[in-house]
Length: 351
Image 1: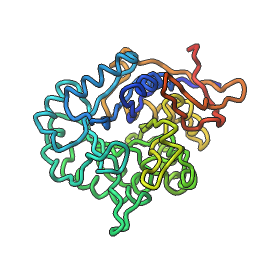
Image 2 (image 1 turned 60 degrees about the horizontal axis):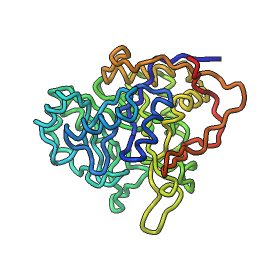
Image 3 (image 1 turned 30 degrees about the horizontal axis):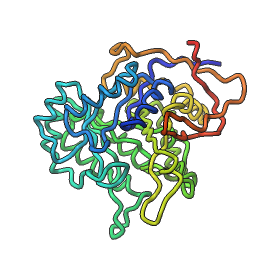
């Protein structure tokens, strides 16, 4: 049995910097993808057009066969003039991180109203606003990792109402509440869903650091809502892997003052993994819609726009296939999500 998918696109991926970037950037294409929407939370974060273009050049040096769409990090230094400059230079979006909720978000925002002039400029030039949909934990307000996403959703609605023509993507949804909120918004609001959130629930990361990510996986009913909207083929929901590599030393250990790193690494197995998961809940017929059509339509990235575009053929392995447990380059090593588990699809390297 085989399936052909027209130029899959990953609309949320972390490609890091330095030696780890040398290891992971080729894994975008290894995992079956031709387009990578690249997150800006580096050290220091990507806050200017020049930084974004240099970062893109670095990635293209490592692997020129991927279409890298670049983003800026929403910060107080960003200005409407910089937004216009970025648009002219081909920068696609701006990513918002609430302060301290995930990796390298210490410079994240605390108030959205102060950025309304930025959002107005983005709406004017048609750049995409990408929202990490959580608020910081607050014991006094009873906000924690399990309700940080529902607590954020009023901000999504408020921004959408204030800027109805601004294209907004709620990133890596994990709750039924998020799915319902996006559905209630207009056609300019979309949502990414990760592969791992289609697989995990809270029990899978509680006590298991390798499955710990931000936002955390939630309850079975929340996972079912994600699966249902994929199975529905809703046009404003599509894949954004949030593939976020961390070395084993950062994932497998924690101390009284430092938690294990938040993030799972799916890039090298991404398309076979998504096919495996969709098949498990009866949505395999929506694979191309989810990993290519919907996202490309929302981001206005037709397949024929980039020479890297290709048709990817998946096939059922002839014998039991387990996910490789380790990727190594020099002193860098990574253990991917699903390591050691059986996977029901593989990329046909002969296509």
